[in-house]
Length: 310
Image (tube, rainbow, N blue to C red):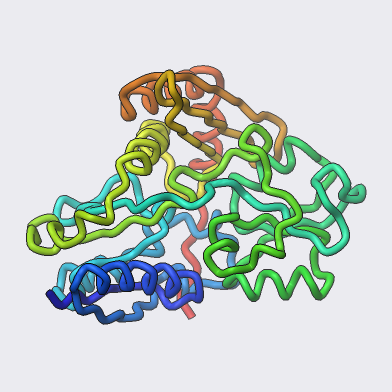
């Protein structure tokens, strides 16, 4: 079967698309990759949290799926909105890479070691809020661009440290870069971080069948739980919400956080259960009732105009 794969054009996105293409070829399929430039790729000079557009990294890719120019799309799961259009489905979630965030610095080996007023780069409101809760003195600045661009900015001295997803560094073979994998309790990752999502047309049974071997049940269970929490809290991919679910002997354990962007309040909650969506909903309700609703309402009330696309 010949399968056309849609992907963003970044180095990491292409690594992910080629990784899936190689697995498909090993299973007897022919593949080709089509690079699709998304809204999120075009707006590079604004912090993601300021753009305020759900699905900004997938809109054009889904249009290509709908138009049958491609048969499947490979995404970072954390870029996918929790609600997909009925015409699309996540056909497979392959085994997950390490979901933690990585502390990267030339001079310093931990957040604690950073100097007073240290300059830290991150594109994520979730990371910024948790950083400021730990170290209110830090100066956190937006950091966009692909992994290489971000690392060059760090190495040139623009930042004392930057925070990146450990999964992306591992996939690109940049394992020498992280000084520290940040513990979940210190820096709760984004829902779905480290996981890939293979999206197809919901009615395309032939392609879904061809992708079945890629599915990892543990990764599906954990990320379903995390995304259920995000959905229940009304969050897109750029809100200060962290969620990490892990399968344990006693069941499914979920750690979650919602934090004020200025770090003045960070609410943590954890619980163990057996049903992914129910556990996500329960923990979300706890966070919302403890003050999470107020935090999120304040963020959503800040109306930010969508920048003109260059």
